[in-house]
Length: 89
Image 1 (tube, rainbow, N blue to C red):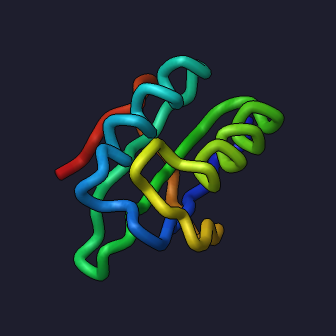
Image 2 (spheres, rainbow, N blue to C red):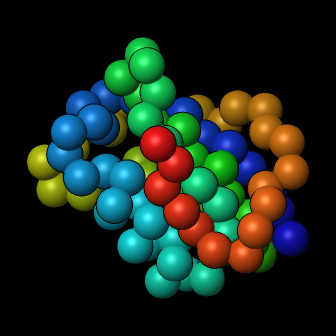
């Protein structure tokens, strides 16, 4: 299993990015969270099989229609808790 955290930067707030991310993650069977950050970025914490987490990261780089992802960077993370993928406010 792989645990990772990503900071997604660009036009990623106000475009349904969190809901799109949750839908994609749940469809892939991943656990974790997604939340808006005060600086306008989105933080994604995820746990799952390594190949699936890596593929998910590539999907984050594309984003939903209406978004404009400029950068996806891996950031340090602690343990990802739970068995589902949720939006955190």
